[in-house]
View 1 (cartoon, rainbow, N blue to C red):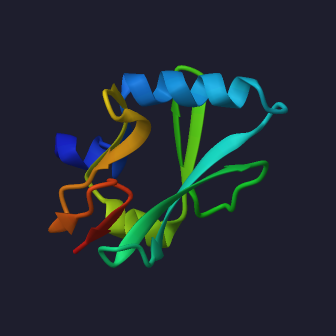
View 2: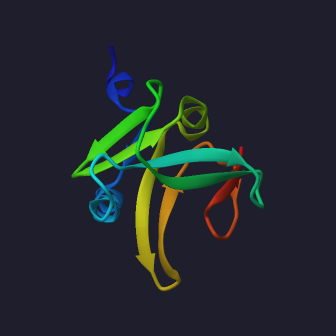
Length: 114
C-alpha cells in the first residue's frame, strides 16, 4: 500500500482546526461541524457549513486539535484531495477550501465549478 492510500481524502489545516475547536467549545458537548457540497452558488456548486449534533455512519470524520468535522460521502467525491483552511486577511475571516478538483471559483470562495 502506498502513502497516498493512507491519507484522508480531505484534510484540515491547523488554523482551521483551531478556529473550529473555538467555535465548537461554545456549543454543547458532542457538537461537530458538517461541511457539504450543494448544487448552486454563482459557479455551480457551493460549500455549506453547519453545526450539528449527529452524524451518519457513512460520514467521513476528521479530528484535529479538538475540532471535529464530518463530511457526507457524496460531498467527499467533490472534495477529494482538498484542504479545509481558515484565513484571516484584510477582507475578513473565513473558511477556505483548497480544492484541486475545482476548475473555477467565485470571488467569495464559497462556490466552485468542476
